[in-house]
Length: 160
Image 1 (cartoon, helix red, strand yellow):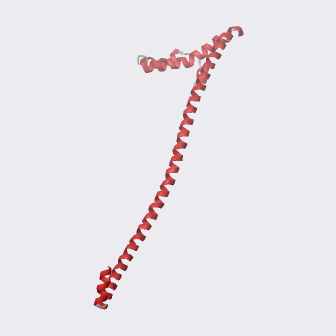
Image 2: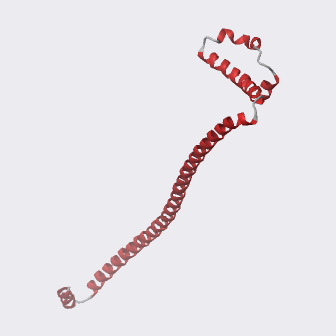
């Protein structure tokens, strides 16, 4: 757009189509922007060309001073943004470390759960075996009681 503006001189008739919209604020702002982007840089350049080097010193110093101020502000804002990004990065690293630790703890807990499940299954099998063994022993004791004479049975019951 800048190249187009430099090639043309400001011609009010070329912007005549904007006249009906000038009463709305948006159209007014747009027409001012067109005017400022096309006319002011060209006119400013023409005005500055006629100045002597000594006359250019003050505007240059003023522009240099303003650019230094803008540069400082930009550097501060960039430093703040970088600091925020580093802070966010550190938070992300902490969260990633925490997630890794929790995943490791979770895998340990899952393995413990599996071991406890296996131990419980073994205990259930042992319980069944003990129950069967006890019932077998009770049956053997009953069969032995039937086979033993009465006085031995009586002394056996006394020792119980």
